[in-house]
Length: 351
Image 1 (cartoon, rainbow, N blue to C red):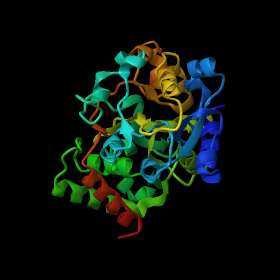
Image 2: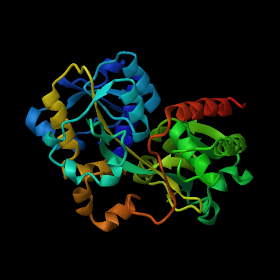
Image 3: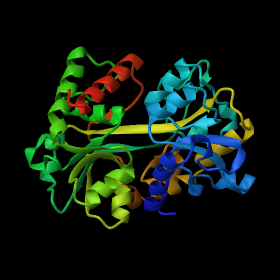
Image 4: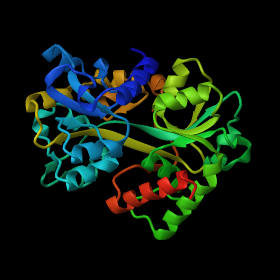
């Protein structure tokens, strides 16, 4: 299945199917995951060992996923991005992984575990698996490189009504903070918070749509309604696969955001713990890195696997290293993140 059909199907399933019936396969392992990640190319060794895929329940937003688990939804593993892990830990919803059972754990780049939220003297609570960037997508036929040299392109009246921003707290605030000179959001001051909120309010009138998933944004840009957007790598991969002329500016003057996601081991899980480890081992297999990059435009946290991929392929997928300011979407204080969420909802509503 190619990128377009996979992501479109994933988005449709999230809307159309009951949560517990999203993708039924192996009943002994329920994976709670982002729509589109039910991809055989990521789980070769699991399928080889067990003969089929796990059962998938799908979601489209990190906050939605957390609320469902906190409300009692049962699965074996879930796929939050890094800034959400503290919420799962604080709520008592997860338990540590036994890393002695994860063959390639030592291949995970150390920077992805550099937080006491992920790894402390009580164990390893999070297995980072995938990462990429949030940066400026633009229609290369209508927008010049000079016009996207700064994230202030989102304030440019020339593109009023032709801009799309993410309907996602973490990504929208990474943009606002970079735009106002903040590259580390772990200890925001009141002044920095207010400056970011003011910038978002200034950008809001230019926004024609806040996109909820990559397939939605790719359709908006392909149809010409949107010329400039703040987005992830997979939107770019989708549009390029479909033949659209789109650029990805990861080195704007103010920088770009980088994020990573991974798997947590849910407490009181209904399925097989052994299969949960088979699942995470399949994800971290060297061969899965190519499937992740080709299918999603994302990079693997497995350093050995990434080093084996030719440099020109990394560049083409926009996952090559870049020399710019990066705001890492790492965990922040939960009260501050809740405040960001509330403020963003007000801004979208016009307040």
